[in-house]
Length: 421
Image 1 (spheres, rainbow, N blue to C red):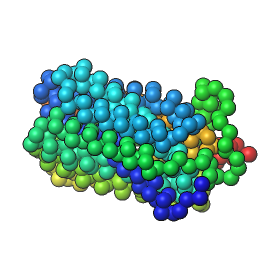
Image 2 (cartoon, rainbow, N blue to C red):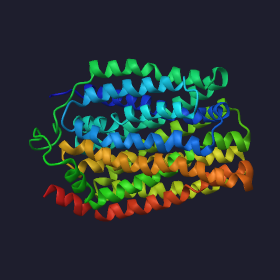
Image 3 (cartoon, rainbow, N blue to C red):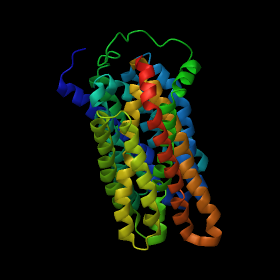
Image 4 (cartoon, rainbow, N blue to C red):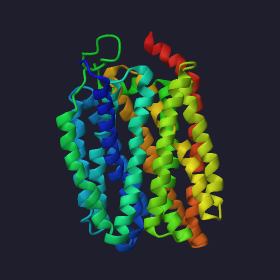
């Protein structure tokens, strides 16, 4: 399929906007959770289950079979249907009357969103050559941070003036239109059109055998763990930053949403693109840089989180958070691009799904749940200050993540030679 540069860029921009919708609907709960907690009488642990663990479990359990399907069949149809499902379930969240109903709606969001990223990653890798994929996948991943920006900004102010139920409806319903646009304007590319060789054959073998073969690649395995612990810091801290600012500094929810929108959105987008650019540029000299870049940045994020949370000044805390957000976001583009380099075009959705399985179980699943549980345990002795120490505990995960990335860099050249031989 010969495609113009302008259409390739349109595909990338469209899928990035889809990712924006994905993260608006995923993270909207975070800025609304204090109001939801007050109305439904929830604990911090229950908030952690809603915003993290339960969503993550259904997201990753559905993600691998959907990715296998995407490696065999039409990826555009999968992405379009997924958008419609998660958008409808986000809107339904606004009608929840108790914890169980809201939990069921969030499970629906997780199931829908499981069909978004792995097929999208695979489509992008079939539109862009290897030497441009780090930047292309990083540009796609900017959608995370624009989504957080829009979700916090819209959610915070809509919540403050109209309530949390209206916020769910406002961000959920437009996704139905986006599903139609994807279906009508996005063309399914031939597998491996940017790679040498014939990639028309379907993947052979059983799913479990393919998963085992992928996990035996040491660099992939360690990088997936590195990404998971990086995301533990990211989700564990971000999902409770609204609660931290409201409880410790008594900032109105609309103002908190604005701060977090600007920091997580702009700084995060800057970091994710910088990570892809640096890994593509430095990776021309040494194949280990795509893992060294996220290793160094993850370590820096963990170190800077400590003075950020211990600061007694609100504005100093926000200032340090800008740098933490940049550093924490640099991992994703290089990690996905290298995963696709380690497998053939027919296994790219599967490799992304396994990567996201580990990332979301450790990061999204355990991060918010751990922070919420620690906060509840410390509340009797520390009061509102318990949330500060609970968030600060995520720095340990960042140090582990950096270590795993450096291990991945140690083995990546051997794994690449094995794959290419």
